[in-house]
Amino acid sequence: MNTFTGFYRIIRPGNVLVCALSVFSGGLIGGKPLQLLNEAVLSLLQGGGIPFWFLRVIFAAFSASLILAAGNVYNDVRDIKADWVNTPNRPIPSGLTPRAATIFAAALAFSGVLLSLPLGLNGIAVAIAAAVLLILYDLRLKGVPLLGNALVAILGGIAFLYGGIAGNAIAQALIPAVFAALFHLGREIIKDAADLRGDREAGIRTFATERGAGFSAAIAAGVFFLLAIFAAFPAACGRFGMGYLLIIAIGVWPVLAYTTASSLIHPTEMNLRRVAFYLKLDMPVGVLAVLAGFQGW
Image (cartoon, rainbow, N blue to C red; front, top):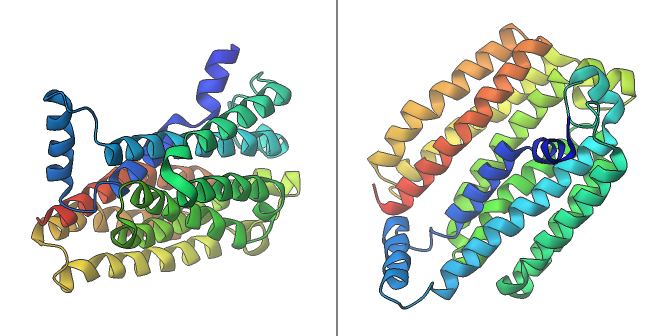
């Protein structure tokens, strides 16, 4: 594997793209997303330039993506032993040197924090805190059962709040932030269960290594059940309309039900990896539902 390909794969581009989408969406929910987006595009086309709030949202999306990419890279540096067993096709086991990966992670983190400058003190503080927490997770908290999962989940929710800071929509961003945090918590527990074999051999403590894959799947099922209930609240309270509820009913609840049942019935390494992949594919559907809700659909 050449260095460029290794750098591209090690950042986990799919996860980075979902992060950018979450932050960007969080910046559009201060009003009706389509109207705000249309106003920004019209301003640009009519020679008025890009509105500053929209530029802040773009900077936030790139900033968060780079910081997450840095965390992903450094996570692989710390997980070399486990990856030799769990995922030997990952970039470092396939030839990318840990030193090159570490330098790359530092450059990504620095760039991500630098891009937070237009967001003001609140945005800069969140960017620095996220970078520090990701490092702390890789160094210490990943080996603390459930606490490490909770930290990743919180960072997943913060993505929407970071976008809300950029788009002056912090209060509105609380709703998708809670949804994202629960979703990430359940998925992280599933991912740890899928990595059980390699983590045990590498001496990494996770909830799965302590209690087993089956019990981890049961805990994740409980988290997803809470998420399914909470997802109905905005529609039940009249905050979101039928469009939101329809997307949830067709594109989110069935996926949560299927992946939960599958992981409980077959908590094997291969199946849990498949479940985690299906959940990742469903993330943009949840974002679409939130945007539809704030649009008033």
